[in-house]
Length: 97
Image 1 (cartoon, rainbow, N blue to C red):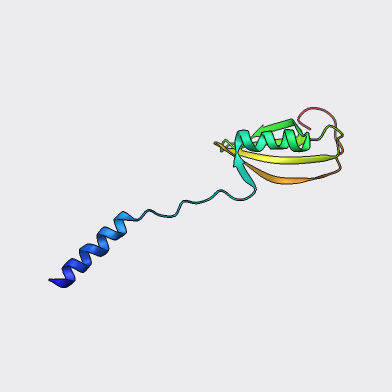
Image 2 (cartoon, rainbow, N blue to C red):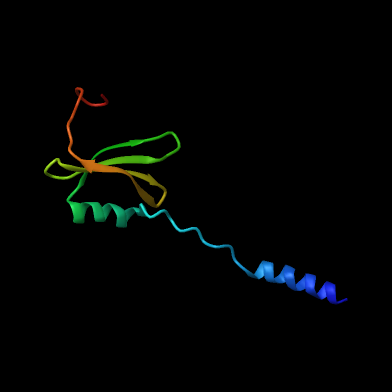
């Protein structure tokens, strides 16, 4: 009888606990907060965007002096920095090139 009580207690304690909540990666933030930070802290503005087939939005931000840039992927309500750097040059010619 004692083992039945122990088994019930184990089952109930397993049901009562919640799984750990996954934290977003450190390079991610809620969309509004993340995009606002790029604009206010670094002065970067979105200059290009594209949507992938799975719905991910990729956005390129560029600083006003053309020096600093950041590539952000937006999935749902989460924006994640994919790449960032300094130095910028346009190559090719025209839209969609």
